[in-house]
Length: 354
Ligand code: NAD
Image (cartoon, rainbow, N blue to C red; front, side):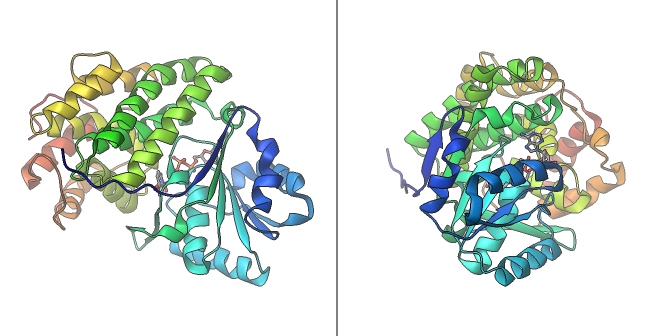
């Protein structure tokens, strides 16, 4: 056995109702909190500001999907004018993503309150999109210092958002299992994350108000974020970044469509990872099990349905093979074109992707 494991500092408060700790947890980080949300979650941002009282200096409700560069510059200017000394991000990966981009510029600590399953709240990975290209990097200053996981905040996450968001977290776990930098602890967490999300997501979409299933899914999302933070990802994440940046596709749904196909692409090259994924899902084949899960949660299964033009496949292939990166199976233009064509059409993975 041979590995490097680096533990990342982060304080996690996990329980139904944990939002009531917001003021005391924020006070550990600062006294002038810049509260961030999306426009759709402005009321929740205002609720947080109410809990923080005079420690909240603004509710900035302009977080956008894929963190456009212009939106980052505007938010940094605003936070600077108000002399913020900490950031409170309440929402999904887009909201936490904007907080991270501000934190990178201004070195402010973040308290994250995730309301989806993206996992961004426990990673030092941040990014922004400029001219159709999504730039992603790691920087320790962008890792939220404190995370409040309150499953009650996810009860209103619509089934159509919950399912794909959970599969986004499963995708972190899948690629952690065949990562170039995989290690035994992270692999245990990844397998458990797939197990927790695989059993809870079908319940979550059927019964969005089921607090036990919501807790299970959020626990799986935490594990997904932890493994994403700890080890490198591969082809699947590369493809989703390319597709998201180039065609402005919805992040979690893109992960959901691509994951069974990327898994099939790597299946022969990463048999031990495939066994663990299949075991966690209670199925005999990892890629088929992931496709079946997508069907069970009622997710869209084709890139066509997400709005990607078929003529974009060649452009995506050229972006995906542009810079070499680790992947268990060799990344070839023909292989990626087959994979993307299958995913565009929404076919069940046929195991012949490579
Ligand atoms: P999102 O943050 O864009 O949220 C999707 C929509 O759901 C938004 O309109 C939001 O307002 C709404 N929403 C969120 N929580 C809700 C709730 N509880 N109830 C009702 N509505 C709610 O989507 P996401 O999938 O969480 O995040 C995607 C972004 O996160 C992408 O930009 C992606 O690159 C990034 N991401 C980053 C990391 C990382 O480690 N840096 C990891 C995963 C995702």
